[in-house]
Image 1 (cartoon, rainbow, N blue to C red):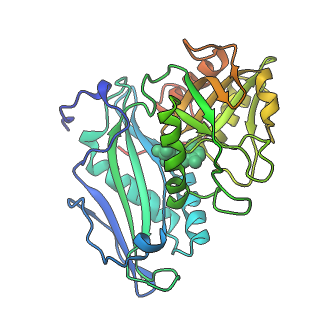
Image 2: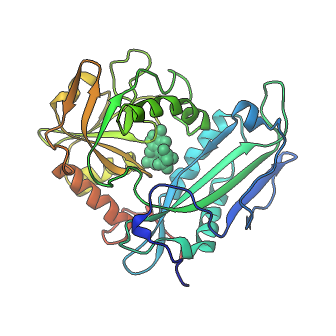
Image 3: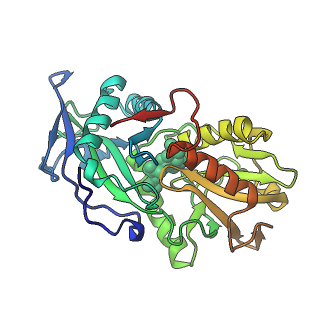
Length: 341
Ligand code: PLP
Ligand code: COI
């Protein structure tokens, strides 16, 4: 199979149409057989539930080319089960988890030419999503849905790749207590558009959101969880019911403990503690691990000792181990790597 003629190393995190998407329809109380389609546009009623009441959720994972030329993806079973959680919370029908994994496999295979080569710095981003498509005007769930998967080759989420970024602390909250912060609902991202544009207008790459109840604890950013390294080398990551259970973060907790022998603390993290940490990073599928060098907030700034030139040393080891596992040159824990072809 010949790869597409793309300058893979110059890709940013953007969308381009590839050959095929996957689509399955839920109608009359059941999922119909899904299929691969060449069409990348959707026609729907102006009154579709997704347009009126934002009944939509999504997932994000990646396919990688390994050193020996295989195409693999990373822990798709966890994306399948997190999407099922999102669907249940939004009164949407669950797309069966085994079928989800089969669909990921089918759509990646069909777009093998778009999976960036090993060592190019790019990956194939896989975006499963679901939405209520029939018309509703009273506030209620739809009764027809589409589950789709699009794929698109991507480079680093933040310009500059592994260069540390500067972030700010948002005055807005990301998620209410007992709200939808722990699922991947489109509405969580709609609410983040104004804060992220404000952050960009003020020269920051991202927002840190604090816990909405007390605004004293660190939650996450609009698209990644936080990880910190203490001065004595512990891995610390925030625990909260209103943040998304990041698959990258859950994997890093295992990598930190089992591969690097670090002590791992998954606990509430107070904003006041941050000044004592040595390193800070954002972790997620899109972000991978993006180092944070500085946090600016009203009345001050925190400059992590790791600085603004490169990743801190422990973050770098975590990054190299995680991406080594994902790209097949470090042995993965049982069940983490799904070989597609
Ligand atoms: N937090 C939010 C709000 C996200 O959108 C994402 C991205 O999926 C993450 C965290 C990271 O999660 P994961 O590592 O599963 O991609
Ligand atoms: C991902 O990392 O897959 C996400 O969905 C985050 C998004 C901000 C791109």
